[in-house]
Length: 419
Image: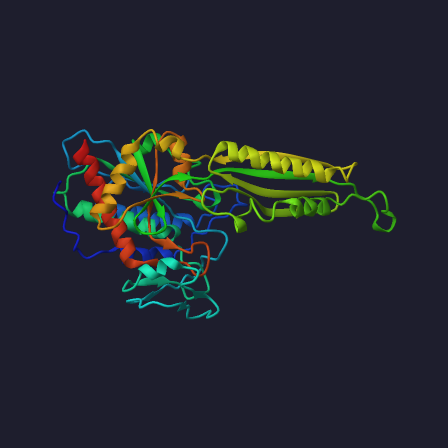
């Protein structure tokens, strides 16, 4: 085994992270542009400049909000080109404006009450991972915004690993590509990516949760839109005539399974149907849902169930119509990753070399890697350390981010060693 590099260097990962989280990069699902919000480019410009300052001369932000850069090879071997990827946007579910991070030094256990909005409490009961964080430095917000560790932790880790590799050319590795994407949180993170320009053979997203985890499986995902055309009539003379589109939509929601097949009642490998929006008026309404399962057959079963619910509800409204449209979103990346077992094997070894116990897991969600895998760039997911994301009690451990940096560096070395 190649000698372990000197990981006792002064990490910059925390400083990077604290710089990035104060830049508002919230994406907007209602926007048709790419990126969906121009403010994502504010962070993109910072990242591109920092990469150029490291000496990566090709680093740049493109017109769609993507940041590309290359760390040149230090090995004479023919090594596959690997890419490390993270997304710049934060969730539309919670404000990412005026983020005020705090560091809870040397965490000693117990709940963490956030300082400005004290109703926001990071409870051990809700965050069992805190039990493994004794002695760590925990970064949170003041309770008024999300933190943005999803996925600015990943950005900081890749940037710190890049800095370390550039500063230590004695570490042998192949060509490494860096990709930072916009709009991952709204499912459009790789809509405009240029894979030819990127030029990578394999990739890893740094967008996972608990330290030590590598994920080679995601949900398969579809969106479902039900368009309801009701019958309008004057409310004073509506008896026997009116068929209210909003009430029809409500009846469909009411018929969805309550004890199974919903996010509130499922875990592990169980999928669900989940209504995410309803809009409209008496004559026309739209009901939006997401459909999730780990298999395509599971998706098809849930979509058939939804269609049967719609058909059954509509028997009570003979003069109205309801049309169900299914929109594919992404598929379980395991279908692709399993063709390249070395990708996960190398990640497991890198995590071990970083001093952690590797855990192979599945994601009850998706990453940019889900779509990248089906676009021809196989891309499992590695932990970034983020927890309780998309809400005001989000947190991340400094020490877990440092372990992620080490994992990236070891992974680059392992690909070179095995070439």
